[in-house]
Image (tube, helix red, strand yellow):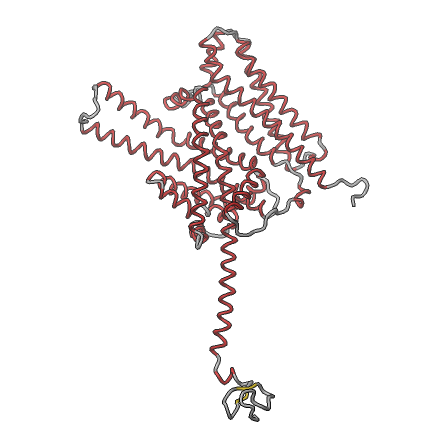
Length: 511
């Protein structure tokens, strides 16, 4: 019975959940409005100015309004964290407060930047909206705003009360499951940890895009220039399909083809590496939550960091093997996926094997379960393709509507042109594609739990059977005189009778 003045832990937990949702909502509103303002200013706004007769105030009204909403949301989040007694600013809340303050400053800088547009004449606005995107200050503000917005969402998701950890309990037991039970539990944990997993994937997919952008851009530019040179040669020489190419041009075409294929494989492998790093961290969260532990993104990173180097190397190996297999005949890629996908929970959850040993342990889990795992892996791949195809098409259509094609072409020829817009497009594409990773994560985690349980049950069964067989073998190996030393032999019929028996139970003769 609750004493007078005592707070019910369940009610306190509900209060924390509601406050967490409010904080996440303010962060999401601020981030969404800030991103929408940047996109409008870089793409649609300049198109409107160059195609219609509009005043600068009409052009700048949407981004200014979005900036005001962003600033209000950030201020609300700061006041909310500072004034609420249940989430009094403590040691682990200071980063969140500093992030919110930083984003508020950046948003204010954007507001001042927009006002400078408003005070300019139309010609100046057109000049700034088309050329100033290459400005170092402008690009820096965009990058800081985008990165801090991601970090704010990550920090906001960590808003939990540590004293309530004990109220998080395991809902299911660690046991082998049927097909429908795996689907049921998978979707349960997908809904439970969707936003946490989504934020991890958004962060790592975006980092993968930026890494690919910075490292592989010179290679992409050389491929693009070679392609344009070959197209120019075909046009200048009126080349007809079916005609014989000169030896030097044929060699250039062949080299261009293989250079393009190698680039696509490496680029996909780089992006996949960051994707599967996110999967490894997220799988840790789901499995620990399944076991009844209290998990957050920060806790997961702190636990995984000791094996983070192993996770990176394993992700690189898996990504190259998987992408090579998929590009070869698809079937080899599926085989690699089935055999090696359990390497990620081995690294992050078990964490006691060497790098290459994790692949062997992943294969060992499939013993007696290869068909079952293969079916579930195909289901996961089909679910990914089912979501990825329409999502990718939708992403391309949305970004093309904002002028992404022109931005990408400008980036290849001049990396400083529209750099901010390019980063925004890459981030939006990461956000759109990140939900695919949440589906894969939960089902890989549930499959790992199922396989571990089945392997444990099989080992226990074999152990019990072997111990019984060992006892029988030990008894048979004893000499006959030791096995019958407690018995007495009947002189008439020859059978052995227990000691203390004076008459044979078979022939009734006296012993």
